[in-house]
Length: 93
Length: 265
Image (cartoon, rainbow over all chains, first blue to last red):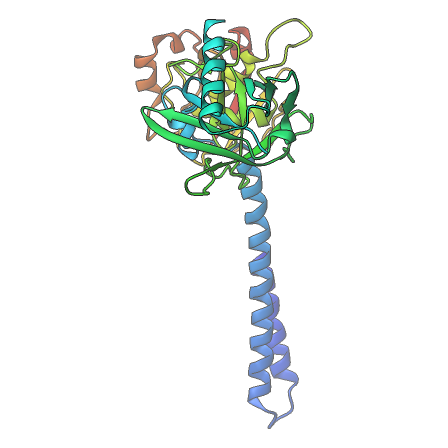
């Protein structure tokens, strides 16, 4: 919903820019203005989208689950390496 | 006792075979305390935690040797209790992390005392028994969620029950037989009656109650997490006891003995 408002606002502004431009004014100027507004709207939308996506991912990531994430957890015993397989220890010097 | 003596003998033998000086203290016992390694040395001293950065653990898994070095050690930034420490375990031969990334990007792990049974329950095991747990796996997540199996509640109940129930829940191991029915990346919202985890989705209609959990699996299931993996109808034929609670919600699950609860899409 927010992105539609921004897009609509940019279109209206672009129309205003065109309507108040004196006759003979550079079409390139208007085109650039319109493009800049469009770009800004797109940028804003992209940022909004990214922010929402980031939050959603952050939230989900807290509880995201799945044994496939961890190869140790894939082991039928739940953990593939432990003291029963330990054969030696080298302490840090 | 016999097992720990054997381990001590093996450790002493290995250190000697590696050419260590006779004057240098040797490890006579390695154990996990909480999420930290502790080494008792032959001169009576003890090293633990950060002092053991650089330690190399040699394993033999099904006859395949594997050396793991502790490259770094630091407190878990997401842990509010100050009792969870992450280890950067590196495979010596390649330098690669031992662990796959957790959802927060951590490629770390920690030791945990005890051993895991074939149906995925943590049992105390013998002296010195430990397993390496990766932060990104179900077991690592449950520790980082706050279910610390080495702790005991004020009423005397071991937190290992909550840890085991959490592992069942994270894996969607409804039947409690070690078979998980989830898929990587499925979001779940978990909570308990201890206040360790609280629900985040009370007002999110896209989440609904999935199940209540004990160390033995689910006490009831309202809907399966990944119907593409198993439908509720199919699940009830595999685990008939799940039909004993006709209407599954937080209240009925609690009455049936659930320790943890979860919602999912």
